[in-house]
Length: 166
Image (cartoon, rainbow, N blue to C red; front, side, top):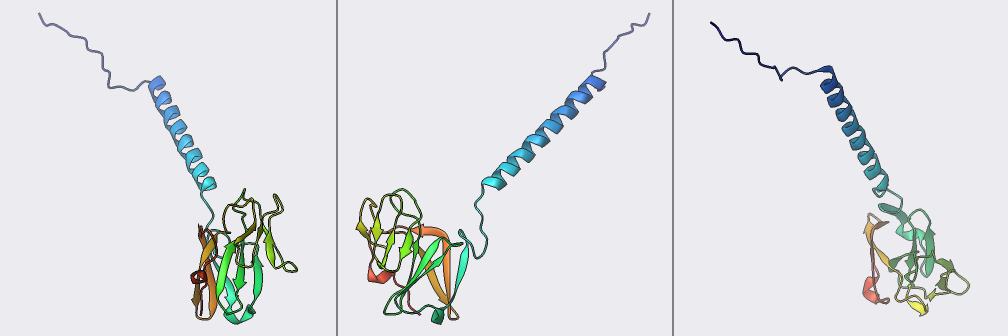
């Protein structure tokens, strides 16, 4: 007499298992897309000519000695010292981060939030700002002033070696 064994074949996929697997795969795909979109949204912009990237300020000769020129898209001021040296200062106050403005008639930078004042080179003249305005790296390339706004450089006060010459 032959014995017949009945085995349940578990290798077959049922409709329910197929739908569960499909729904899980679609859910995982949607989660990955949302995560990727969130990371792209939070990543800083690095557009040439704007803050966070490299800004070509202009020809060296277009900035007269003793001048301050604002670059709103770059969020900095370009200072041309009387002796021809260049310095960039971040327009962000070191106290609470308000945007400072240049007041040419007073020859100083002024923070509108708490009245901090900074001299021509960005050193603190009137607290509560704890230190001088931050700077950005400058290079002179083929007669052009190029400013890298990717990383602000902190400093306590102005020193002559911070000026960049042609």
